[in-house]
Amino acid sequence: LASIFLYFACLAPTIAFGGIANSITNGQMGVVEFILSTGLSGVLYGLFSGQCMTLLGPTGLTLAFIATLYRYTNFHNLPFLQLYSCIGIWTSLFLSILSVFNLSNLMRYCTRFTDD
Image 1 (cartoon, helix red, strand yellow):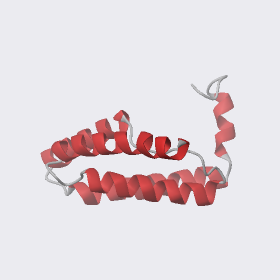
Image 2: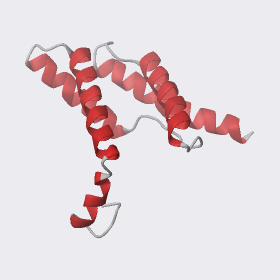
Image 3: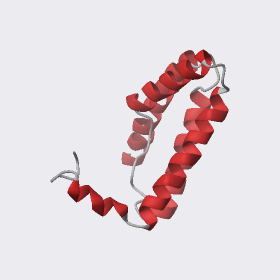
């Protein structure tokens, strides 16, 4: 019963944010893409992180970023999906480099708290 509850708890915001993204991006990204990305990232995160019970899903900040990027690409006549993919690849590469060299330890020089 708890598994079914968690399934729908993860599925509901994915569908909601996917519908909003569909209207923001004029159909370039939608519910299907959000469900696939949430499911795939959840499986990969569970396999490689050792924390299989972590629940992943889209947030309002993700939607705000997508909306801003879409407006930017329309204003400058750039392809949205290609730029969105390049940003994702760059972020993955950057975070991989940070994790390999354990650069999260540098946060202690920025703030006293890890959540700030």
